[in-house]
Amino acid sequence: MKAAVIVFPGSNCDTDMFHAVKDFTAAEVVEFVPHTANSVADYDAIFIPGGFSYGDYLRTGAIARFAPVMKSVSKEAAKGKTIVGVCNGFQILQEAGLLPGAMKRNKDLKFICRTVGLKIENHNTRFTSEYAKGDVLQVPIAHGEGNFECDDEALQKLHDNNQIVFTYVNDVNGSKSQIAGIQNEEGNVLGMMPHPERAMEAWLGSEDGRQLFTSVYRHWREMNVVTN
Amino acid sequence: MVNVHVYITLKEGVLDPQGKAVEHSLSSLGYEGVEEVSVGKWIQLKVKDGEGLETRIEAMCEQLLANPVIENYTYKVEREATV
Image (cartoon, rainbow over all chains, first blue to last red; front, side):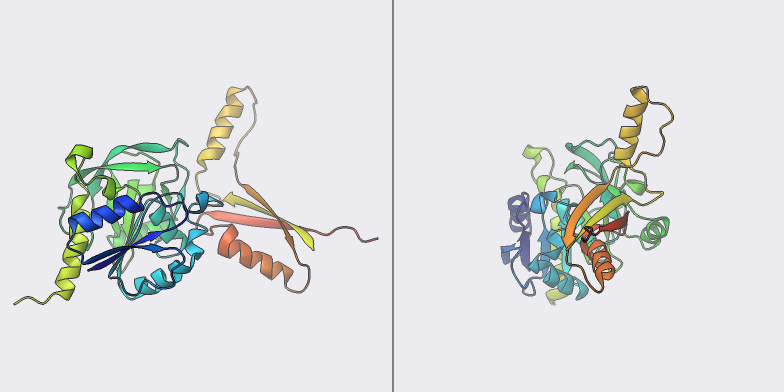
């Protein structure tokens, strides 16, 4: 598996993401790819890390989605490649139209930075196959705008298609249906506000994020490595 | 060039956490009879006048300035008085 970690001006979780992929999957290649790159076609999995791309000016993710690299990300997403957006990465994927909904300010208007309970709603995905349905993970969140919003029709669709992958155990930010992470209809693009890449070592508080990365790798291996 | 004022607000029915906070704050300061406070953005642009001006402004709003998933936009074009 070849993995890319996209770096925008203002990304700040890129190094954590890089190490999560490198240390916990058997990816042969993990590389940082700058926002100016024209193509990510060489990669099997593309990770969009958190941060404050372009200073969150205008709206979170609104400027980043027009960075040159995003054209190629959209193209690869349409081909079925694995795309994972975390936090600001999720917001960018929404702005790019690769995932539904949008983020509002947290309901209490505070930036929330703490570890929260995260429930696996759907384990039949390429991102969560190594978890079990109903598993509750401890994963940090760090965002001011994670209040998931969409209209009723879009919300119904998310429920009907099992696109809701993660929910918060408690209502932390006002998100509709306590949504913390969703995938697209095709199941190859994931966006989540919590930071699995910050939950990789017990001595850092939690290692519950590991299986997200091993799930992604497992999917790639099952699709690409022929075993007898 | 004309001055264009773009106003962006959350769509009706979308709960506005900032508006609610301001509303509560006004009420705790003793201002009565204030309802439905909404907080939005105002963006001012100088745009070349001419054919298709409105279409161009609307395209800019749809593509970048507003997020049509949760936001509405309105705009006002201000032409300087000619002598």
